[in-house]
Image: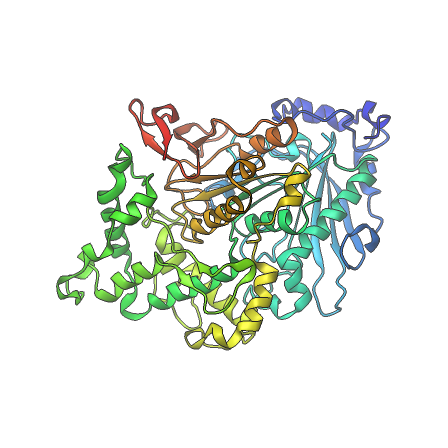
Length: 573
């Protein structure tokens, strides 16, 4: 660290202290934490940070990085919107004044889009940085200003705790009238989306941090959910020296398998296989009747999800003679088969990267979870409000829209191709190529482990955007390679029953980032973690109920007492 700079105090720091932001921080500054500039005028110092950065600061073949703007941003107060794509997405967190740097990294291929990035430089830096992962097919600039995935609503953001934060659009920009997968027709854009853009932006952020403070980050973290969770795992696998701690929530880890299995599930629900909304509720209620109380408490959450998968058979809802004449009160044969397809493994007829042979079936519980915005239960992800169409329509499930488009643009490279006629055997070479690029399933983490890296994975067991068993199988492949004790020395896997992809349906909020930092910097492994379900009633965001967050393969069993308290449950195997 720059020791001379550590004694300087910019005027903006007083503003942050007055707002109570730094006082609420959960992460103390590292020794030698420094101010933004070598004077008392951070806005003016921020405006000077516009010089380009040469490609030599980037550890991959790349064009130069240019800075579009460097702007001093004022304090932003806490606000909660009435609607949002996710529960946490309704919250605009309290943000201190900071220097916002917007820029782009030029491509090597003149036909490829640039990589856009945003870097946020706090007035008083704690010596660390956090890279935010993206979501879906990206194409939208990640600001690095939001709550971290799964964080408790009242927690200060990393920026408010003094971290440099940053994000990227992954090297392409969504275009009106074009499918979000269209960028994959360009090889450089696809490689950037797969892994390269996050590495390139990380290196640019390190160089910009050094320019602003005179020092590089002493600790670097990556936090992501869904696609961002895949990105985090890929960073540990491909760039093991770049991050000290990684939190990966609901990662779309086996990306190739997911797109193929999701499309298979959509085809199974076409025609007579499609379940109407009332039939989704029928299945949801039947699952709860069979499994809810098996964990000791009927609370609408299936905690023993593996036991429920064994005990619940959708055929129990079959209509007389399987004809479907019972209306919404039963399931026809093709509907029963569609549910069984969702819950069954997809077996790849061609080899996938890292010895993976397919994709696991989905879990159980939360089928009828109400959508939080567009994202909840079967109706949002699998079935939609209308049966799958070719080409997809807005009323279709998200998985059909994502998966069928991925097969067209990533694998067949035929935007007009009919995915109902798609056969993986006809695209074996391309599938192998994309699987090597995209799939974060390499269990070889020895370099990341040897340098002291820490990795935490969290799966939501009522997730219908991706199968939580994909992350579980990955963890088990790591354990199989090095043994449980060695794996747990640097990697932990947790499962949250009843929680959907974005954190609805059951207690889902936890200070996982704080746990990651404590483990990385103080050698304190995660212990006693609790999930909270919070009311979006700012500023206190009261806890409605809590549960222990159990390390796989344990799950929370009710042992008596106040059912709203985590202490009334124990993690059991």
